[in-house]
Amino acid sequence: MSRTLFLLLSAISALRPEPEPLQDINGAEAQFRALEKRLLDADSVSVEIDIETRFNSQPPAQLKLNAAWQRDNRLKYSIDVAVGTATVTQTAVSDGKQLRVTVEGKSERRAARADLFRIMSGSLSRAGAVATIPIVIEGDRPNQPFDERYKVSGFELGKKEKTGDRETQEIFYTVEFLRGKAKGTLWIDVATGLPVKRALVLTAKNEVTRYLETISKLRFNDKLDPKMFDLPPKDE
Picture 1 (cartoon, rainbow, N blue to C red):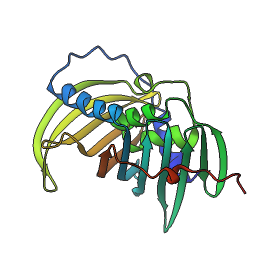
Picture 2 (cartoon, helix red, strand yellow):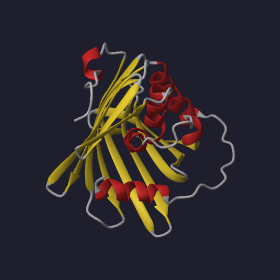
Picture 3 (cartoon, rainbow, N blue to C red):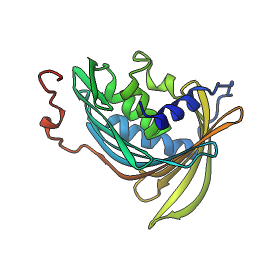
Picture 4 (cartoon, rainbow, N blue to C red):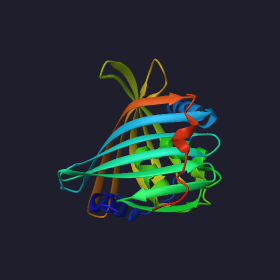
């Protein structure tokens, strides 16, 4: 695993959750839940996201996610991590039964988790692209459903503003994130109800990780080429 990715995941994992009172559903939560329902009800999801992370005062790191998954637990996943002048690409492919993960040129296979579609869609809705990294690359906590893994609360409406050429609505919320807690801001396109941008701020003692994603593509129910999910007969 690259040092940039290791530092990011280590910072997130160091956080510890605190009790949060139940929140009443309001307009912010209703919009958030509507987006999540679209992700969970789709037959397929494809997404492209640019991510900037900053750990404490270190220079920002750039990541890019391209992924597609469908209801039968097939998955095509690639994340590029910029490390200095080099780019490390980490990939995963699931044919619905087996998941083949390749990290820094080394491949391994394991059984595809039975809820792969649901946890990918749920983690993306609640904690963004970075949340999918440990699920796919690390394969951690395979029996934990996303609604336990990423608990959300504290929804509040922010202001409406232009994000690029789109009018967006700010939604503030809190997410329990890899045994920690993060403050999130989600900008939702007023016209389409789809996310445009998300920011998360994770704090552990004197360490702060900031994460900003720009969602350039999010599509539902595309007819995906079955060949993109094919696995080679064996790893070299």
